[in-house]
Image 1 (cartoon, helix red, strand yellow):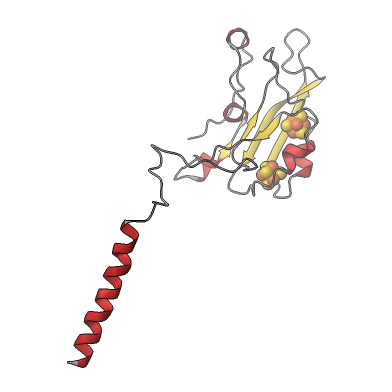
Image 2 (cartoon, helix red, strand yellow):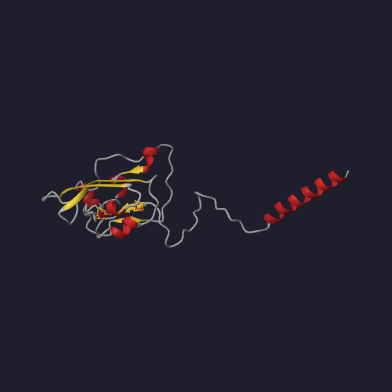
Length: 163
Ligand code: SF4
Ligand code: SF4
């Protein structure tokens, strides 16, 4: 009888705790319909930025690759074609890949970049069921080109599209 009463008391206490949470403000958000505001200094998914005229800011210097403590950036540079340069420098990155599964989002690549090309954004909405999804290439990373640049064929690189 005694143990029955103590079980009921425990049940009552548990229900009381549950009920008390009904009247508190919610701490969850209805993602993805609503997104939680991330802190100003949040470091999320990367982009490769362009200049206003559409040229790529990345000049293929490989400093971000050297600075990355997780060794997850691969850059291969090539000479800019004289008639249709892709960047303002002598060279551009014809290959640029990041393995996001190894990335620790430290921001060292962004700090090392002399042109402001690689930037970490507040975006964090990347999901996938295969490893390849997280191996992102230049086409995935580079911000879209202005219309005229896209028409001139500077918008993307042949490469692996993120799945
Ligand atoms: S954020 Fe850090 S770990 Fe990720 S690619 Fe940049 S330097 Fe490497
Ligand atoms: S993103 Fe910046 S640091 Fe990395 S290769 Fe391009 S210009 Fe160099």
